[in-house]
Image (cartoon, rainbow over all chains, first blue to last red; front, side, top):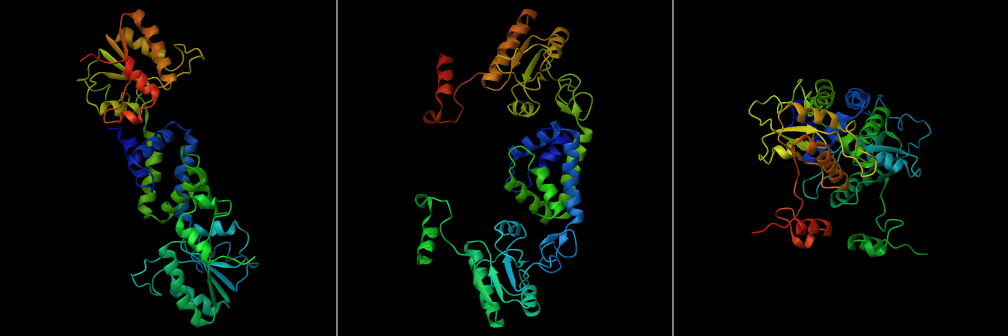
Length: 197
Length: 197
């Protein structure tokens, strides 16, 4: 219905997650009406990110170098590894400024019954790091979902025999949240994990 | 916080309308993890649309040619012009298959008190078309908002002296909607514009 070059961009945009036909149209017309330089910068940022970014040899974080900035940082504590499902989870944890170790990106989480083995999800690579990097603790920072919890449990089974401590993030009420609005599963977790004062 | 090429793309994406920091991150990581070819096609679609698209000489619709496909279509009725605020409104009206004339894109709408003159919003160009194209009716298909209605009223004042009929789209209940859910302004309009059976 739109002129071909416009329709082509709408089609490409609507392939992005969470972008429907309607918002793809809105975005395409925004880009059409924006400054030429803005449109060029957006197109360049896409191309450049794709051509310059790779995965860290050690932890599989995204990086422009062989090692990511965290692995390359000599001040980081090498005795603890925080395991995350996806690279985008790392900056979220970094923002807390409470973890000083290194990361390991699994590349996903597995559903309870599909038999997660060390070959999936870069677990073999994690085991190798635990073996060689003098790791004392592995923190499973997987998502608080059935898949994430299953993955965390599996990590514990896999790594405890190697003599490392395996922990996972606490579940409970979000800080600043309202008890009224907590779902019963979260509230249940908060109750089971209650802390003595 | 992210690696520079990733952060750069997040920054560019978050400049788009309706894309917050969080969805920009999600989109950037989607593009990062997508097939190389998909990312290239998206970047190319942006660049290509910007370089190949211009405004129709006659109606200011977007086009890859000098005239848009509608103005260039000899089967269109040249005696009626449907005036829209933005080019993206045209395919919406086309989809009804009920309008066979040509369009005119104003490029926006004006607020009641800022003195809309023929110099703004390509009204001078519209007047020139009414003068020279044998136009009999102008339909104001502006948005059903205060700004759109003000613009429609202004069009009527401007064009009626030239001897053309000026109409605007009917306001009322959306077809398939539920009376319970209609806001009072829409319901008021439906009442005032009630049609005898």
